[in-house]
Image (cartoon, rainbow, N blue to C red; front, side, top):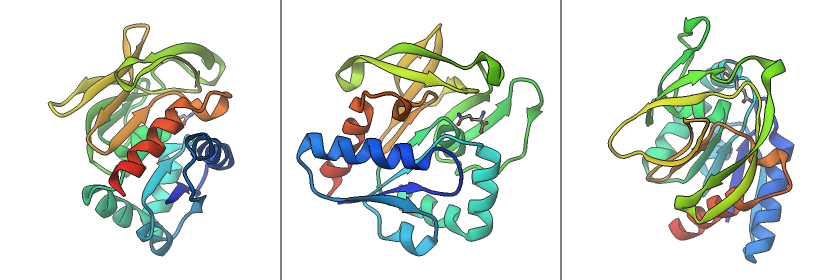
Length: 202
Ligand code: GLN
């Protein structure tokens, strides 16, 4: 199994490490590494788009051509896990809570409307207990850093988690997305779930 973490900007190393731990816990053999080029992405069985700055990750991936390959791979069924900025990039629609429309490049695949910086600014970042019951995860921890939330979902989208009445995790077929960072905690249950999604597809 070959899982990549989009390595343009953001918390790439933390996701590589959490995914490796998750694979080991499941007893699955495979490689996990940072990827950047369309060529590297074309060979993947699964991709994590990490947290960071979505405008930056989107723009750089547009210029390198990675965004086109990522979109084609997801459309052909490759599982993807979008975290925070990754969730924003996967969405069909995103606006900022304060500045409104940002015209940033989006993959336009996940049928949700996202509000960026939904919980406030950097200083309002926090850690909280969340659950992901539909995935069989009763309790886990999430780190919310300038986190987005999901304001509206389309038909094929399942709500996985809510926090303070806001939707913070969803699943749509081969797309899993959270507005919080599970890789910044010691609990790899969401990464484990994602590795199982990839294993099922293989
Ligand atoms: N607010 C950031 C953005 O819009 C996301 C923050 C994060 O990934 N932790 O890109």
